[in-house]
Length: 309
Image: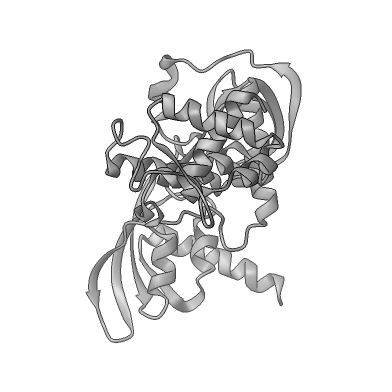
């Protein structure tokens, strides 16, 4: 750590703790107390109101209610910055990660209002370490402009090995995606992170870097959904199971509510796995329309019955 970095950290410690002793700071940075007092003089010369209190219970601190960034950011802006950094810190695997360090420092620049929301991106059944390792590896690759290789499970049962130039990690809808240049397709592509396995950094630098011409593609649909058509579905859903089903099917419109069930309409992708998807809700949902979907569900149900005799 350079002398300048130590000085900045000392400043952030003052912001966070408000009062410390010279001996505590000297021990923390492994410097002399004389150096600590020189830092105090440097901060004072920079316009930061450092005060020293002599005697028992004294120490080094900042004047009451001092905020470093008050002339630059409003309180609302400070809280917005703090909330954003704290959200990114939730993705960090290493306790010394830059986002975690920044989060610790930024807390001193905001009020308690920055804690109004907690963001945890992990699904309930996701191994936390595996998820964070994937984020960490992708972050390394993006910052170092290094290509990565991984196995990918696509729709329709496609299982492929991909080598890509990673650009961004995007959270859209209810899932995380990697936006990158795919060397196999020779085009920008989205890959769902939950379907990526065995990822590793190659020794090859990115052959294609992100540019403004890809911005429109970045805002377009996820690759696996481009050629999918949608169908209008009418169904009866058990009122008891409604909260769970609403978590998995977006855009449900309740047409009529009865004592035990509700009549609903929604739009759903017309894909091969749709019958299995609806069957996993058991008797909690009954599809009324379209007839083609009902036939496919019936056929799939018979296949399941045959598996278990």
